[in-house]
Image (tube, rainbow, N blue to C red; front, side):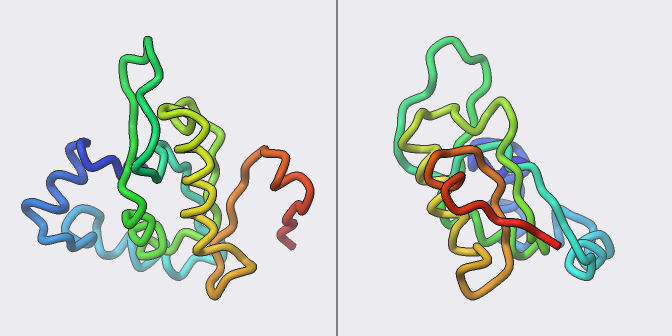
Length: 129
């Protein structure tokens, strides 16, 4: 999924769909995603307002931190960060992404799980059963 505000889907969502996710993703699919025991989404962008584009990359993706709410609306309870875009805007943006996703962490009020390989996260691994 790509929630970068410069990407076509987000432009459509915000400019033509009135911010309504069900105008971009079939409502039946959204319902199934929300009812699933596990809904895993690959986060193909950073969630940050910081950082500079990495030199030499043809495509870089960065979403506004508030766009994390769309992941929750989709029913995501597992987010993977193992992809070629999570570091598009450098270390600060990557760390911001972890922090912004932690809003939905198992230690928070809801149930989003974030898989990431960082020293801070390795010290307190999360296991799902």
